[in-house]
Image (cartoon, rainbow, N blue to C red):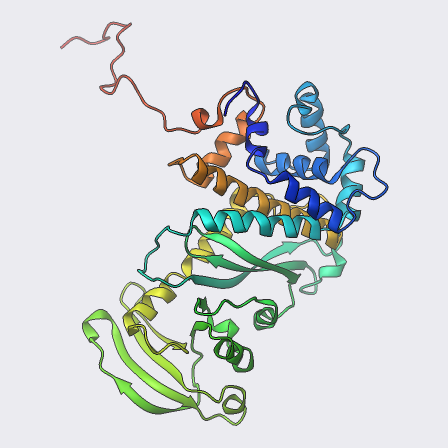
Length: 389
């Protein structure tokens, strides 16, 4: 409830602070720390994310300008860019990774009943990666090409609410399929992936753990047809077959049967072939699920536009991971706020509004509600018309 507090303080109310402090203690985040605690670091970095700060000096200048209000925002320590830089370099990034997972759990419960493009009882995920380019001189530990560095964000996105459930950060050279080793599997769930994740030994783990995958097939896949299903070609489907792999290596890595579905996308004028280990869903539903894979591309575009993950405040691996995980926490926290307060605005609009109202003393639900215009006809009641016809 609003009690005359600033917007930033009301936003922090949605954070489970007891769980956050437990994460800090787990990795000894406040060991030998006199003033600048893990919570102070998180709030300063969250402020930087919400207000689109460009550098540590930018963060320091803006927060010092709001010094009388920092106590009410939960920031108890004196703000210094050197102190913040040291915290990003030294304090364990796993504190914020674990806390982000806690927020993700809360958000997924809130968005569990949301629908998406396909009517499906099971949980559906999209798994993909995006590359963030870095300067080779500043980030030599992440060399990607001869003259540049990069990191990859391997992200598992829940299609209900577009909540990132899992994120694995690697160097830019890491092959996408290797990230499947770190992916936690949920029995009965669907995992939608592009053909960059075709590794039959790793895909066979999905079958062994009773999870389903939908992946786009590569060209010239060596296989043998075992059975064919009837399809309605007016829907875009071309074939629905049960196949086995016959390649000398692929047959050993994936000895079970697969379902091969061919579909023609009229919008893209492109023929697509999918592989899945699910034999119960209709073939058209499988094709529609794969079409939802585009949601993860939109998510990557969104976070690069609205969050500070393309430019970093520190150059070490710990600083980069800390900033990424805090940005994920901010994204999920805003998603929780939106659901709890039943705000109809998009997450992008909410972030833009919060960026200029964080230190205002106004009810957060009031500042985020849709504006209602009193004069719907566009005419002013206090001024005469310039032209009279």
